[in-house]
Length: 289
Image (spheres, rainbow, N blue to C red):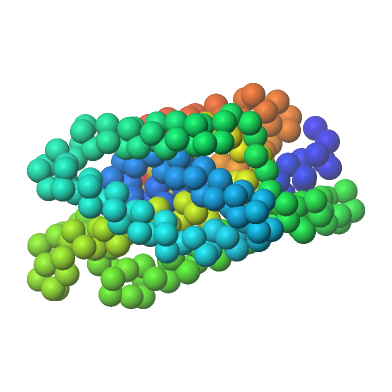
């Protein structure tokens, strides 16, 4: 085993883990906190990628800046989706199987719409930092991975502060635990869940920009992340954003080392292996309660 290869694989794994954290945080909120199995989340990430692509190609604006500007639109989209989900399924107590089918439908409808508009060709963006790399001896740090990782960790830090220091944030953390107590605190559980779900969809805009900065995308790429995001969410522990970051880093390192020394075709199997082992030996996750 080459020491230089190992160091570069570890660096790449940490940077990849930062990206995975951004991809997973929306699922950590919707599934981990709200108990809503939004398997369509990767499709909204791809939607964010294509919005970043359109603006970058037409106006030349940085894709990550585009995603930040698109946050209100994605928040509104999340609010609309939750209203439909609540009125159609959750309010009637049918949010388990039928709700899951609803998000399956959203996943495929979004993907088909993107295929009809953009086709199946890979799309990419331009930014000043994408082709730059820091060289420290034999260690290489590509900016296209470093910038998404740093901004991802900053985003999760701000979200953790919001959830732990504000009334609405603490209400979001409590909504799946005791809705009666939440009502006694003059908070409407449906409104709190709508806010939380909207935030989860808004994070998809940022993750989508990160994705298209890191690699070219096409509409079906999002499917590759369904297993990963739920593996990270479960491994980190439900309702724990710090756990999500730790789990994302671990999975990123495992995948990077596996791809480096055993081939990239083995890397996806790591996610499902980690998920199965976590469910078998540590169902509460690393930082689960």
